[in-house]
Structures are given as structure tokens and as C-alpha cells.
Length: 122
Image (cartoon, rainbow, N blue to C red; front, side):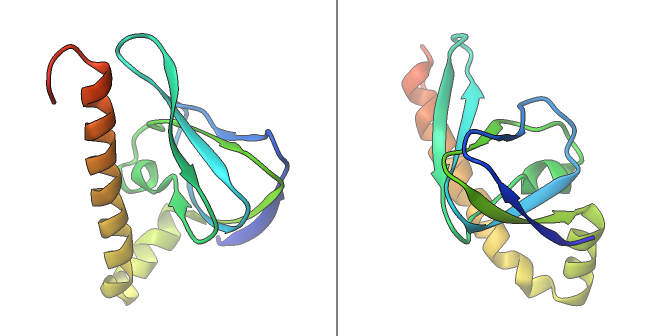
């Protein structure tokens, strides 16, 4: 079920390791994405803004959340569950191309960031 709702500044949408039930499209506002790294430190890996999507990896893979997402300001998001994603893929597979490009871009950035904080090149 697709629904839009408001998020208050400072509110945590989900925590790293929690279950993945929704992906979110940012209608307005900004969010920080934070992650624990191998050195035991919690770092901001991304700042997301209007029209960005987050939480899609966990919904697509049905795996726990890979990061923590927190609202940096009062915001609005639209939530989509796995059924919504699957329905979109069946009705209009081309609509998923922006999500695939986004995932590729995020992976590239994450690999660059990880190489900065590890002793071994990634």
C-alpha cells in the first residue's frame, strides 16, 4: 500500500540491521544515511534530498537494513512496500531503470568511501 506521511526533524526512519518492509521516496526535506564501518565508527555516507529514494535495497533483497536513515529537517515521504515494487516491475519494467542507476551510483560511492576507512584497498 502506497502512502505519504510527514517525518519530524531528528526522527529515525529505520536503523541498520532492522527489517526491511518499505522503500521511501522523498517528497520534501533532507535525510542523512549513516553506517557502522569495520573500524567500529558510525559515519554519514550520504545526504538525500527531494526525489531521492532510500530503503529500496532491503525491500528488493528482503534483507535487513544496510544503514540508518535520519531526517535532517521536517520532511514528507511516500512509502512503498514490496508488493508495490513488484507490481511496478510487472506493469512497467522500464520504470525501475532509475532505481538500478541509483543503486549502481551508491555502490560506487560506498566502495570509494570504504577504501578510505580500511587498511586494504577495495
